[in-house]
Image (cartoon, rainbow, N blue to C red; front, side, top):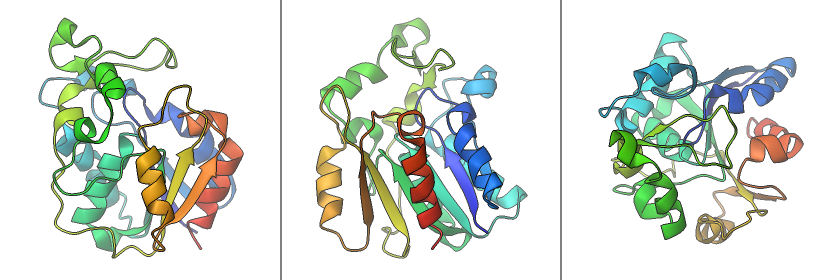
Length: 223
């Protein structure tokens, strides 16, 4: 049995991963779909001080409180920033990593630095309203909520790379309506034998568009 910790992308809460979590539990695994501070049912906690460090601490607290020592961290999009930082800080609690059309940062990278002008425009959408939060985009699920801008701008600080983790999976969505900011990363990881790379016919919301493929990849990440 594996323990999955599912970390959503920007503007999203645990609801985006709940169907996958239920299916993983039905398959005999434990699964925690996490809502990060300031989002989803925790949107009342959104302030200008919520940043990437805050979201990493959300996951670290879960691992500690639930006494998880074999976590498969699954991060969608922005969630890749979060799970990378967590894996770097507590590698002894992490047994595998699954990046779902997500950032795979190196030390000093931020979401802002890793994406294109298209995504940067998304990040600053609606920021004039509060000065510290990015408004949900019109094409997102109605449950999407403002995302803390600081978390998208803050650079991640890492002490090591990901070479210590034998089980690393990258899920690349091939069905973007616009050019994918993850295409260069996908091409690079294809040539790296330490990664298992999967291309799926899906939009960026892989959890919604390709649930069967994502479930199977998560199961494979435990082997």
